[in-house]
Amino acid sequence: MPHIWIDLANSPQVLFFKPIVDELSGRGIDITITVRDFAQTVSLARNLGLRFSIVGTHDGRSRFRKGVGLLRRAYQLVNFYRKMGRKVDLALSHNSYHHIVATRFLGIRTVTMMDFEGQRANHLAFRLAHRVIVPIHFKREYLKKYGAGEGKVRFYDGLKEEVYLWNFQPGDDYISQLGISRDRPVAVVRTPPDYALYHRGEGPFHSILNYIREKARVILLPRTDRQREWFLSRFPEFYIPEDAIDGPRALYWADFSISGGGTMNRESALLGTPAYSTFQGEKPGVDEYLERMGMLRYVSSPEEIEVRKKEKYRVLVQGRKVLNQIVEFIMEELKVV
Image 1: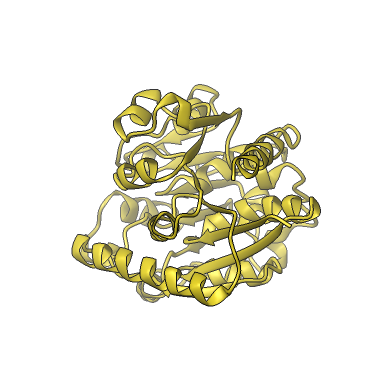
Image 2: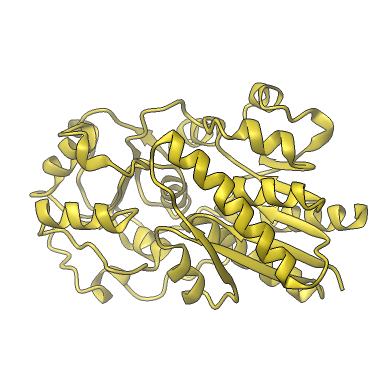
């Protein structure tokens, strides 16, 4: 029986890999999953019924601590594998750098997936991985820049969020189930991927929060416990959950969303909810595609956000095409080992 080792390093990867794990398991493939204890990764994995082992934590924001943390967790993963007591045929992650370093050191064939060109650590991941899988909208010049030649890359036709949204079931009004009033438009807001946000003063993100706080009901989703405590002290009227909530259902039933990162923006767009991005870096190719389609809007000031109830509910994902493509890519890699 083939054996695949998957590492989940961040919260969005849990939703992404769950249907892939189910599909591979259904084909008789044995799966081992390791999870980094960071943000909502562990709680999401538990909520989705995944069987996993926790290996390592997040190491902070500074480059020095990230570098030390990369080596530390890679070492922890190597030790985990040696204690596993069985051979792994293929290593798989969505750019878990610790995992890629560890599995290359162990001589395991390594596959990584990625959908964001602006991550500098792609230099490491794309060079070390045997195979790189990216969306068709990924900017080609960056593949060459990061050391992934044409023969090393596979392209899937769509967005990674389609992997787990293809069979999305909205259920009943999730906003009401959370106990949130619908007397105003409802916004789902995700904090930027900045783990010391509270040291940066009243930047654009804070201005937007202040702009919508009197106009909308806000579900705020912080990335860390420290962020949660900070925002609770300054925006006590917001709904800030202690644990992971059903993000896709919240987005579907919300009237608009605002995020400083990428995954939630794309989920929102695919679930038919107006999506606003406050991301300040270079736009990913997938976001440029959504902009062209009128499904995502980048904003730099609060006034650009339309605080209003949306007119209709709809899902814009067409079938399981992306899931099928990615699973077939993985099956092809198993034939190589």
